[in-house]
Amino acid sequence: MLRDMLLVEMQEKDPGVALTHLQQAVNDRPSLAKHCTSIARALGKAAVRVYGPTKAQSYARPVCDTSFASGITTPNR
Image (cartoon, helix red, strand yellow):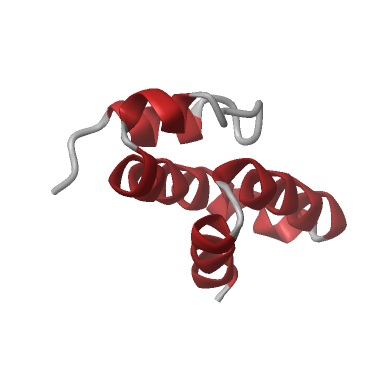
């Protein structure tokens, strides 16, 4: 549910806002940490589809290590 909400937010606003809200959600509910990597990677992949790889990379934040960047560089399947 959080993933879907953040993907919509990314499209309506930008990936930076979604990543900030992901970090806030993990800070508020530490039990979400185990899902952080997969959510950040999904946001990265979606950002590439919406913004292209160069623009998507400009939104990278240190959320869940480098998972967002990993999603940008991993080919979409």
